Length: 298
Image 1 (spheres, rainbow, N blue to C red):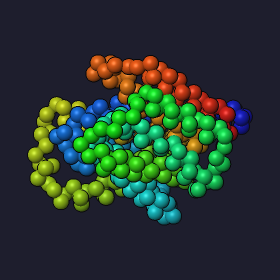
Image 2: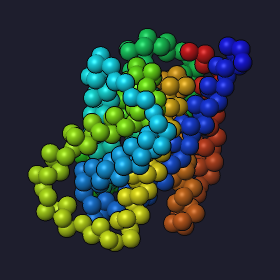
Image 3: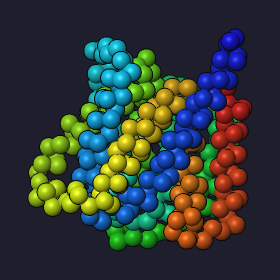
Image 4: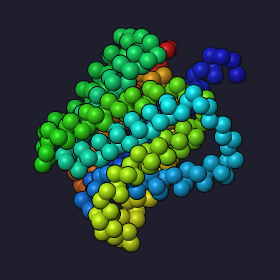
């Protein structure tokens, strides 16, 4: 396989992995919104990571991966786990608790823009016309799909938490490219362990509410399995792998496939209506991804 064909193969494979991850996370909001009423967001993140790490380590053993962590990478791995797996996910699920998924989708649409900025600052990736056009198309697409609904019990705190989530997720996604000499499974395991270590002291300052969770309730069991195994272990590995195959600026756009999937699931399972704006927004988002991957060479 020559260099050009290999480059195109990497882009296609990376696009598929990033798309699948975003689709899985699109369904995550429905699960989180349901279970967060009985499990605090911070505890929910900690529990999903505990479930995820079991499956991740088992998979690593089955694959017989060889581990060799370089000292120079430890600080960066800690930063990825703290920024992306701990701060970003806790902020995201706190927002879901405080506000609405529609508002979340609109604010989350800023993530690709933040990724372009961080990629420019860290990797000196150029901010080209293709990137700008793609970002504008994608953002308009998200707004057309979900509209702008500023609602919730603590909307200002909710919006602030999601802005933090978008910033930290974007930074984490860019930093992962600096440790791409590890496998995506190894990156996910290391960052998950860091998140568990960071969150555990906070969790055990309030053990009473943790003890009160009914872990035998089917809804709790199924939610933790989905969040831990599918949404964390599987989706994080695919996302981390996709980030090493597609440049930072383009990869962020795949994140915006989430509202498309979320809206479709709401229509299928919750009987929510789908407006004409959904179809136009979907065309804009998918079109922005295609333009970025097709015409962006760096």
